[in-house]
Image 1 (cartoon, rainbow, N blue to C red):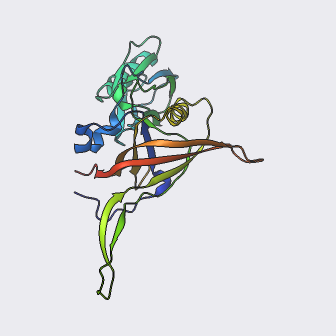
Image 2 (cartoon, rainbow, N blue to C red; image 1 turned 180 degrees about the horizontal axis):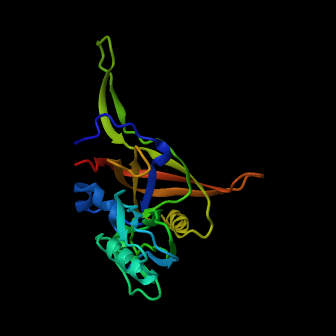
Image 3 (cartoon, one colour; image 1 turned 180 degrees about the vertical axis):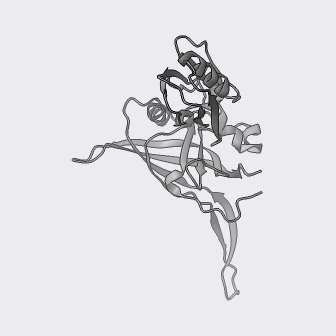
Length: 274
């Protein structure tokens, strides 16, 4: 069902970029464009450490948030009285491995590695609720790295400009008529001005700067979200190129990068509502 009454909070919106153009299949299904991981991506992994003093029976909850789809899964591991660290770790491992996006490695002394599928991108895994006598820490071990040709979420976005379709107007004056005639010409989707808080070593910012330098044909996408989880988001994808990528280093201010994205062709709108 379409989002007929949703209100979208622009602070939750996201800007995406890929240094290749949209395929015909992606134009038919724009949602698939956001999930492209490219060639040989590196999956994100976490080190999960469980320590136990005297375990109290209860439900230990870990929240998994898929950064690509916005799906949230509250993973419940049932802890028994007087359970050991190895037992709790095995229970947690089994619970998270029930999620199709996550696998768990071998438990050794209450420690194991949780690995996300590459398609999950930069998703998160955090402890939401624990039980008495049990401590669970989840630390990122390996960051997600998009493969060659991956769709990349642009970080540190300060502002996204406006998108619009504007048609050229062709005048057709006719002698003897009281009013001048006009015809509608071609549509122009114009350009999008995006401002970023510049991160000099960030791989996505570097890829954008390189695309601007080389004149690379790219594709871009925006997700409008009505909450942080992105429930029933709306989105648009389009081809284009970065005509500029400039660094603003004003005194006593945050360093910013101003980019101009020129739209090539049409804007394709879609949503992820069922």
